[in-house]
Image 1 (cartoon, rainbow, N blue to C red):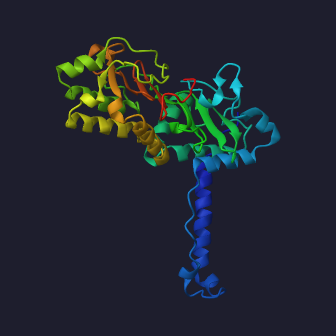
Image 2 (image 1 turned 135 degrees about the horizontal axis):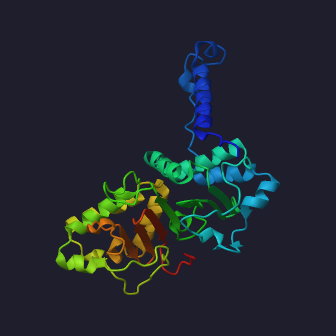
Image 3 (image 1 turned 90 degrees about the vertical axis):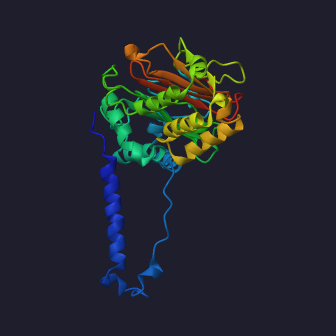
Length: 346
């Protein structure tokens, strides 16, 4: 297996080149060769919009050879013989296609494009934390990870899918109507330590559970009795429940200060992801009645150390599931749409 082309090095090279051209354009020698050279502001470059993940995915698609397309490109409604409808498949450890991103099946430029897409989906502050997760779980970005390009760019039906251990991420440019993140996603982290002394040491996602437990700590006795459930559902049971009776504490029963703390939890859940995806989640929530239509559930099952710091919990609405499994290590399953009638195979 060839070493993966380091995307940061490529990006740095491109930045140096652009910086050099800019410096040259405003330098004395070049300025004297062009009209108005003494007024470089007349030739200031227009701001260049940062490419989106979808734009970069289109570039990646265009760069593929016919042989590569036969391996990593599939039609929009492609049903994998094992996984089913690929554009809605989610799992904690899987490969959508055979070649790893780090394999020499891809060129260095293609590997850099995949990395750029990934970085476009994740906020800058969270990229080092995701890189730590990938190093711990996979040996680094591109190892034990694969991609699929589903549908055709520009057709209104196109999705980039990134899979691997403890990661299912996707982008679609709103090709999947009414769905946040382009479909169900997954993130997780295994640091090799299944204890809480200290709490999930080094796990980059555990602070989300800490924040959720702070909400639980603010509940009164009646609220805790409603919120605490003995057994957890299967962690991957994230089909939309609709308007059926659901266990847990209704968010509408929270006081103002409790609700403010839950809002902080939701902000932490969304924090790793790009602004467009955060906005889509909020639109989907609003369409189904907001957080008030959701319930918060904590599970006694899987309480590491028996200390009442609930490792497993869930925030669930009619078409909103954010399931956090913290025992023995972190698995997080996310499935969000604007209506429970939206079809997924989650």
